[in-house]
Image 1 (cartoon, helix red, strand yellow):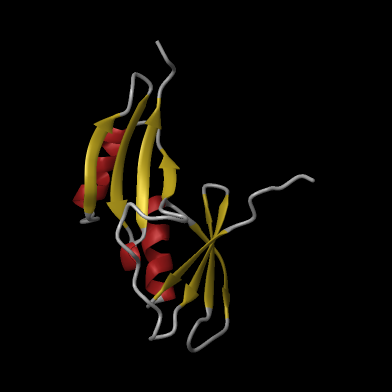
Image 2 (cartoon, helix red, strand yellow):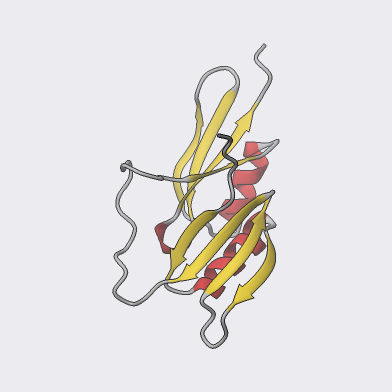
Length: 128
């Protein structure tokens, strides 16, 4: 049996606004909208990853605190984490954890997306 990643599914109090964040901030592309007035689901392509952003009912519980069990965050790789974090900070994206060295070939940081979504920004370098 072979498995392949099909999508990541997020829920949001405002799916259209959340989708706009990923488009404007990370260069995602809107693929389609499902449903009208209100939109039920936004479908994005985020660097080759399909992201569904579902319009959440009012009674949906907010995101839990991290660290947590289950899916905790989305990781986005960049070539230059210093430039990426400067850009995100300038855009007003909340930073949860600044740039941290995780060994000689990995640097990471965490920012917060809509509805408390945790997003890791990471730079992998060739081990030297």
